[in-house]
Length: 376
Image 1 (cartoon, helix red, strand yellow):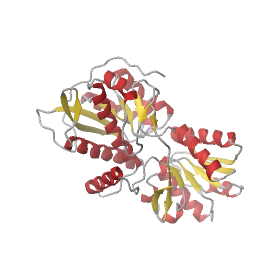
Image 2 (cartoon, helix red, strand yellow):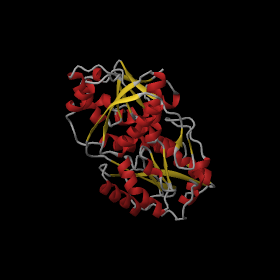
Image 3 (cartoon, rainbow, N blue to C red):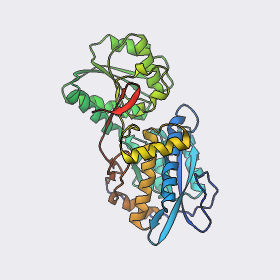
Image 4 (tube, helix red, strand yellow):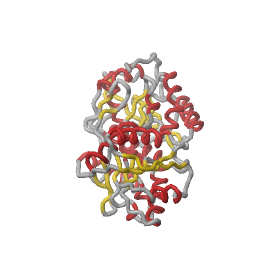
């Protein structure tokens, strides 16, 4: 789908916003808006996105800012809590637009992102979601994403499970009420079956469920060689604990929503050996990653996850688009997006195709000795 959009001038930033640093009155400012859950069950994701963006902004501003034609711009961040719900996401987006944002880093979750996508298209503003992975998140012409798409990681895990791990019989447990989980499930199961392997049991649950014993007992009664759970780490915490209590020893495979599970499990042994898709691993001995992890730990006292890394890369994508376009007008930046290349934490390089998707390799992370590490 060829990228195009109506020209809409970005409104100058005049509002007071929460920002990681002060910008003097005589400096040109690029006001970057973002939204995600800062409260509620998914608060970890939005908090990570906000903090990852703040690290990138601090880094860019300390290095002199973005050079846009003859002008230099410093970044400021305005971030709103959308509670990972559609109605709150729309409110958050409207609040940010009222503040005069020049670009939108959001939303964090797929449902919220889809709810806002058509509004951002009508406004003609460049939207880059760090972690909205559902297909509908980038359907409008102004929308791009940093993370993997749901089908992309579902297919990648199916290929890895069948071709590399050699599994021929796989059980699946997924959230039937969530676009993220169902999108990955659909792609995974189709690819597994296309490769001649078998989905021996497909069990489902609903958002908010905490008892998975019935589904796990059903899976235990099959000849499955592994369990694939495309879900968020809050669900995984319950699922893996209850599987352990049932005496299940099947290996777990997962999606990028697993990132962060070590913070919530009471016993790391319940997820030891699991493998999930993720574009980022904080333990990698890479200079960019090491510097980012140190800055994040110094600022917030914790280790960053992939959501923080996606947001960090998203801010740098805005910088690259501004500099490529020589303009901060959204129409110009949107046109520049397919021309840029970002040396990021989650891909090096990261480029964007005409659909708005990030082009980068899918990676696999495992938990070994209670720590995340890339699969060799």
